[in-house]
Amino acid sequence: MKPIKHTLLCATLALAFGIPALAAGDTGSGQRNRPAAREVKRNVPETAAPRATDKAAGELTGQVVYQVLLAEVALQRGRNDFASQAYADLAVRTRDPAVLSRAVEVASYARRFDQVLELARLWLQVEPDSKRAQQVLAGVMIMTNQLDGLAPELIRMLDSDKASLRANLLGLNRMFARSQDRQAVLQLISTVCAPYFGLAEAHYAVAVAASSAGETETALREVRKALELRADWEMAALLEAQILAGKSNAAAVASLQAFVDRYPQAREVRLHLARALVGEKRYGDAKRQFELLLQTYPNNPDVVYPVALLALQENDRLLAEAQLKHLTTLDVPDKSPAYFYLGQLADEDKRADEALGYYRQVGPGEHYLPAQLRAAGLLAKQGKLDEARAELRAAAERNPAQRAQMAIGEAALLRDAKQTEAALGVLERALEQQPEQPDLLYESALLAEKLGRLELMESRLRKLIALQPEGAQAYNALGYSYADRNMRLPEARQLVEKALQLAPNDPFILDSMGWVLYRQGDLEGALGYLQRAFALRLDPEIAAHLGEVLWMLGRKDEARNLLRDAQKKDPTHEVLAEAVKKFAP
Image (cartoon, rainbow, N blue to C red; front, side, top):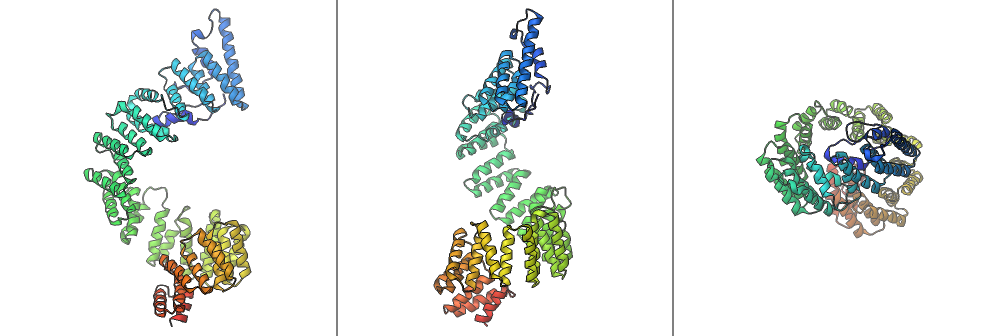
């Protein structure tokens, strides 16, 4: 027989009740892939065929074998409806469990769920205690959203497996994950669980359904009944907090705190409490919870890593470094985050060689690119520019998907070393391989502008606008470039206004708008945009522009103070230095 992949129908209740799904041809009795014809020959009820003579029985068996072969050939040729109908007819005639099982599978494969429903009901008439038949019937009723009348079937299934009753109650909601009518699901699960309300799991199941249906008060009432029956049940405590968080994070935190006060060893609840405190930005309280967890679970990565991150947040560098180093000794699938943050700590402490060692141990993933760029930056600071560039090129070979970003990083090293032509050359070579890569186009345009190659800058930015018409940065860069050179100001304004429509709260675009207005002589309008930009980001270039506008408005003391304060924070910034020299000598 042609094997048929398990369908959602065949797996739905298996997932919820922990019963393995059956392979094609499996009848649920423990024997797999038995030929249907052989099963029919052995199991056909006596009423299925005349028994007057052996010849008559042989003729019937021959007909069955022929019809099975016909259906299987049809399956192989993709005639699923024909195969489904052939098996359904055979199943109705023989009433054989093996044939019914195969007929259900073929009908499911053909997506004839009306047929599956009829066959499953017949199967249960033939084998009332068949768990497989019960699963199929319930599954197809769920898939076809026939929730009315499903409750007796589910109760019968629950009753047939008392040993797994608690687990099966907890699995009920998973069966209805795709159902859109959450109110109908809540009503059904309430009905199904009612006979088992002496068990905490039954109330928990109703609470989950109620929460999904938006019935918060019902959900809280039911989960609290579950906690009355099992006061130390962490899963229920977590559900209660989740429901409360929909209205008030503070109430959720209080609920979790009360639970761990009663049950100090409740690890999962304390862990969620600590995370919730982080969400509330109560970092000190969160850190204390993690430290309590650390005392009991010193080698649990789910505890060690958050402690390290919170220590970083609190600037407790000694604790952070100790826990990150400890994390690298534990059995965790990815140690890259720990190596990356250790590299950062060593880098900030001017331990360059140690930082390099950590950065080089960062593997593929979200920290790989920043680790490589930081390592290259360290080498460049040590005067090893060629080595830094070689490392980025090697990293690009190992990770072709990040080739463009590595090229941009290499160009940045050359730009910082005042080798702007060489930097642009790196990006040009990268663009030969990826001519429409947006970041390469943008960065090469900025370098072209720095070199005074305005035609190249303009062509790159216009190409980027064509590729990404909803991207604000290219409009902004082109418009600002015109404004900074006091040229094509009407077009500059149109470009920046378009960028502002796409990103209305971007401080750099607000700065560009202010600068365009300044060039057009609208000092008051320029001041408003520049003040908004500077409030959002204390950037030295924005400070330089704002200082110049204040000066031109006659507010010279404000301008001097602003520029001098900004220069204290960024003493080497070229644009700011020029403004200070010009307006606040």
